[in-house]
Amino acid sequence: LKLAGRPRSIIAHPGLGPSSAAPRGRPRLSMPKNLSLFGAYLQNVGAKLRKGFKRQQITRIIPPKAYGRTPSASSQMALFHDDDFNNYTNKKWSGRWNRRKLTATSFRKDFESDALNSTIYNLKVTGSALYAMDDAGGFDDYILRTSPEELRSATGEKMREVMYFYMKNPEAKSWALPWKVFLRKRARADPAYARYVHEAKKEASGRGMAAQHAKFSPYYLPTQALMHPARQEFVEGSIQPKLNLWWREGKALEGAFRRRLGEAKSFERAHADHREPHSFRYGQTMGGGGRQNTTPRLRSKVHHFRMLRPY
Image (cartoon, rainbow, N blue to C red):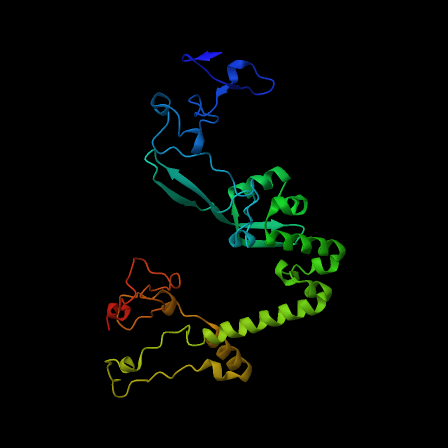
């Protein structure tokens, strides 16, 4: 066989005809192997073939689970299923490229679980996990029947262990405690003590909340500067009204009233206008508090929030 007046040796693929052979020693200028891939497949093509490609064309993004990447730490505290943090490279024909990071689109959902006999509040899930739950037949079936390689979540594995524990201990399930009470193995070894610890911490939390809100009286008490407002003196000879100290009628009534004062949270403190002087403020001039450690607008590290106060 002669090519361009000179004999050339042909390297033929076994099982293919001579038409699939390529000359040795020079790159093959033909259709690339995969039109959606970059690299060696598009480096030696002609200008006519390059016109069919966009200047910033990228490859189809492969899910991290498809090629066995280790799950991220965020996915272990949620249900991501196939989704996770990913990266892709945007390459131009000039040779320059930049790397982009993709964050899994997640939602906060509440799930009612019959197997856990409780409601899982504010669980972070992705659309892939929600679709997988529909395919499995529900939340409980998704947790129980999905393999660890598909689930890829430490939270899901712990939920499955608690579900198996409830199957063997229906009495503990009837307590309807939050599922995290039996998250640890030592808690499942002694369910009665785990229940006691949970109830004790719950009661201590209630006392702490009552102490925190003790300064918020349900009745409006003016500041010391406004304790003596301008008022008119009683007319001489008029009947002066007496104070109705109804809580002094009995010690039980007084004790209940004082406990109510200690646990209540005032409407004035909770909903006061933060633009008024002497009004209640909680957080960085956000009135009702708002999210912690965040600002509604970008601020410098040396920004003086105290300068925003009206007093």
